[in-house]
Amino acid sequence: MALERTLRDPIQLLDPASYLEPVPTPDCDVCGALADQWRDARNPNSPNYDVTRASDIIVEMRRHQGGVKGK
Ligand SMILES: [Zn+2]
Image (cartoon, rainbow, N blue to C red):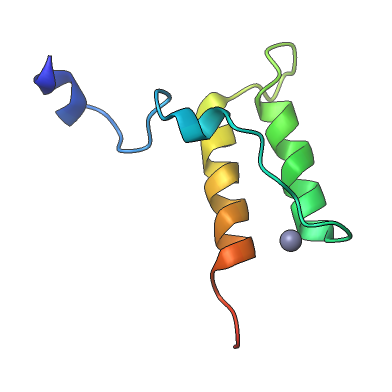
């Protein structure tokens, strides 16, 4: 079973964090846009449905909110 992990991407669909809805910062356009994309990517009825993309969006939002400051 451990072999399966080595064949896959480190960002897993099994990561529980990927399923938590991201919390956008109020009045932030970037967060708002990312949240919209996330909902779209998490909607099985959407043509843009892509859970891997949803994970990426969450990472992107966390980086946007927490990272890169004081430039
Ligand atoms: Zn933001």
